[in-house]
Image 1 (tube, rainbow, N blue to C red):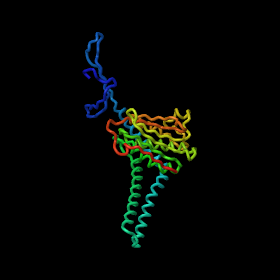
Image 2: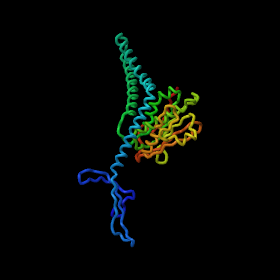
Image 3: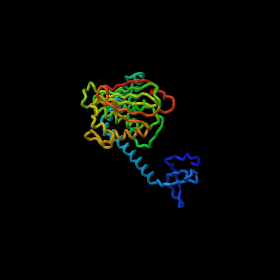
Image 4: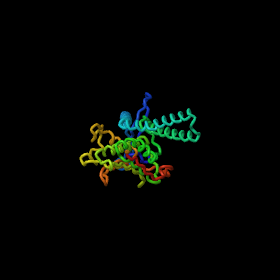
Length: 314
């Protein structure tokens, strides 16, 4: 500050009053220059911003509650299809157990046959566990946890959660992962919320599309110091009238929509120093895009360094 480098927007400090009470203050400092250009002293102002900081914290907590509510709404809409998806491995586990017990009681099963059945049973149990883990991770209430995040793994979880719903709606899901994707610094659960909201919107937008054309593609690639994710549908598209209001709070084109989804999605992406926007798709429909700055580290290993395409057919 004495060297003349005090920030023009001021700086914050926490002070303590004579009675021991602490308060947040915004301080402005500038040199006092007289008419002859001489530096004769300093000018300073101290503003009590305790209430402003309290209001900012309250707004942050309200935003977190809105995000949690939006996640619960999404999971509520998916509940029936997820219950059906979870019922399949549980039914298979029960069938394998019953079959093994019957053969054991009859004394007509060889050890190798029993081992094969148990391996299949174990695989179904792992599948059920993965479904439950993804649901639990998505809906649990937690403090923001910003850490290095592999978008490829996060997108695979989102596709796995949405596969059952897409299959029920006759939509083919395609996931394409670019090679050598760098990590991003992000809250994995919040990014999942964005992707699943955009995927659900894309699936619902294709309700009037011919079943053989219903395709939702999710692609991710690195470009110009950022990681770009694209979610493209073949739906009805977005009219110019709705385009201007699409990200406005409480605006929705759905009969029973609350208008929180896209507004919250944009807030989450911007909180991660990214950008969210949409464009008309070349072959009809809409493509939503969001970019996130890369983390200055080597590419993450494993699935992030592969090119993968998966499809969930009708």
